[in-house]
Image: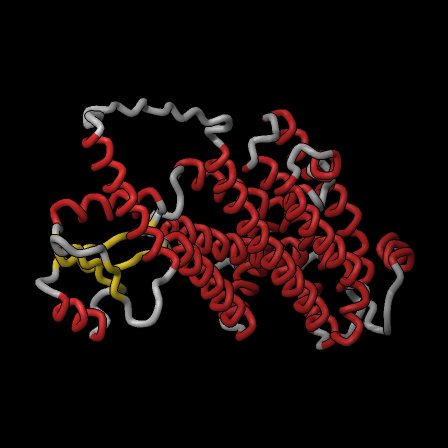
Length: 396
C-alpha cells in the first residue's frame, strides 16, 4: 500500500485557515467583541425606535358637549402633532376624581350656560393648553362664521410640492452607511489585530519553525488571511442581517431595497478592506518577536484606518466634496469612504469600478512585496527586524 503524497498548496492553505478559525471561535476576545457589537447594534435600533415613537401625547376629559368638542380636540392635536385621547365624563365630580387618579391630564368643562373651564391638577402642560385653546378657538370661529351666514365657506386645498422628494431616503441610506462603516472599521481593526497577534505568538513560541518545515511562508500567510477573513465575513454578514431585519421589523426605514443594497455594499467593501489591511498587519507583525513590540509596528496602519473612518464620517455631510471624492479612490481609504458616497447617490458606476480596480492592484502589490518581507522576517526571532533586512534574508 503506497504512502499518501505531500499535500498541495490549496490543502496547506485550507489546513491553516481551518486552524485559525477553530482557534478564534474559542477565543474570549472574539466572543466578547461579537457580543458587544451585536448589543451596540440592537441598542442603536432600540434608540431609533424610542426616538421615532416618542411623539407627544395628552389625555383630555370632557364634561358637556362631547360630540362637538371631540373632533375639534382631535383635529387640533393632529395639527400640532400631538396624540390626543378624549374621554367623556359625567360631571365635575367625576372630572376631579379622574384627575386625582391620573386618568387624564386635564378636563374641559363645557356645561350649558357656564363659561368654559379647564381643570388640571397643578398646571396645564404646553401641549394640553395648546390643544384645548386651539380647539376652543376653532369652535368659536365656526360659530361666528355661522352667525354671519358663512357656514358654507370653502377653504382652498393647498398643494404640497417637495423640492427634494428623495431627501429622506438619501438620509436613511447615509445613516445606514455610517453605521455600516463604523462596524466595518471596528472589524478591520479587530481582525487585523488577530492576524498580527497570531504571527507574533507563532514566532515567540517557535511554532512557526515547525510550520515552515512542512509549508512555504506564503501558504502560511494565505491561510491566516483566508481563515480569519472568512470568520470576519461571517461576522459582518450576521451583523448586517440582524441590522437589516431589525430595521425592517421596527419599520425604521421606508426603502427596504435601498437598505439591503447599502448593507451589501458595506459587506463587499469589507472583503476588499480586509484583504488589504490583513496583509499589512501580518507583514508588520512578522518584523517583531514580542507582543510588547507589536503596537509600534501596527500603529501606522491603525492610524490610516482612523483617518479613513474620520473622512468617511465627514463624507456623509459632503459626499460630493473634493476630500470625499479623492479619498474614495485611494486604496486603504476607499473601503470606508466609498460606501458613504454610494449611499448618498453622489457616485457613478465607473467611479466604483475605478476604486475597486485600484484596491485590487494595491492588494496584489502588498501581497507580492509583503509576502517577501514576511518570508524573510518570519524566522528572525532576535528583536525587531527592518524591512530591508527581511528582503535581503528572503533573497538569500
